[in-house]
Length: 399
Image 1: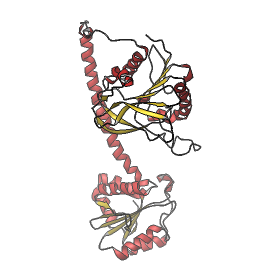
Image 2 (image 1 turned 30 degrees about the vertical axis):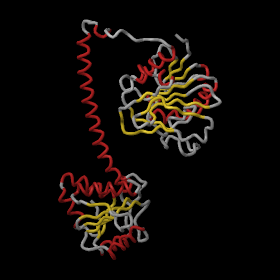
Image 3 (image 1 turned 90 degrees about the vertical axis):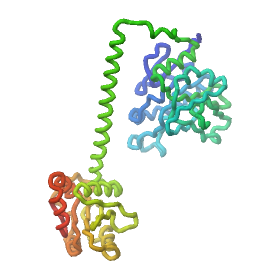
């Protein structure tokens, strides 16, 4: 058995190692013989909060490699720090969760596969007990950094049947240590996977006799049955939560009626009109109006103030009237005073008198997004009435 000072980052409760969670202060890495990183346990939310620590971790880890020690990392899905959380002083691109590694690596998410082919090298054989716990993968490792890291070398530990890397060992010529990237285990949890890595590092054997689990313990079967029942209940609740999240996401799209960005706003207006009873399709980007349906044409705009004669959308309506209009009912939906909360827009002039006169003479129903939103609510109770408001209004529609 080898006595080692081991640091585990990202997982707790390992008696043979010093352990820190992602949210805790990382001790001086240079004091340890081996660093084990559970990158698969790092979430986007936590990374957004701690990304600033990663460059310091990487710098200390390079010292580990320079002195012949190693970093072992269970990889996780790659992600960037949320731009909203990235300080303005940080240049683009924002930090990634792989910035803590001493040797840069690219990891990409791919369609899940099950073939795991372990190489025959001594390094690969060393990790066989770990690879026995890997029966599938959804991450592949790439390395586009040959030119920027002269003397560096990357060798596979395990591949899929297409020869793509799912586990590698990386080294640099002037550093004796190595960086190992290992796939996420599939037949055990992260805690057991790290315990296996500690076994490999220390040479300890925690293997119990095969018959151990066959020893009868009074009461344990009842507990196992209850656990299974609760797991089934949890699965049902999780499925329900997933369904509710999907429904909530669909409903949340209606808020984009007030979006200050054109594409989500047009999509939301289309959704609302569908609920009111008007089917439409999006037009090509160069077409004068945004939506077309049976005997219906819809132009959508978002503006910081009110719609006046100089508004670009008024020119687009003129183009539509001159080149394309047949017998369609034309609707203008305007997100006026777009930066203000909807209820704060009450009482303001949304269309100038000149615009209203022009729209009336061309039999256009003009409404704000606030009005459209109220029509949508009305359509839930009386769809025919909501349709009638639109079809019979020339000029500004208020509900």
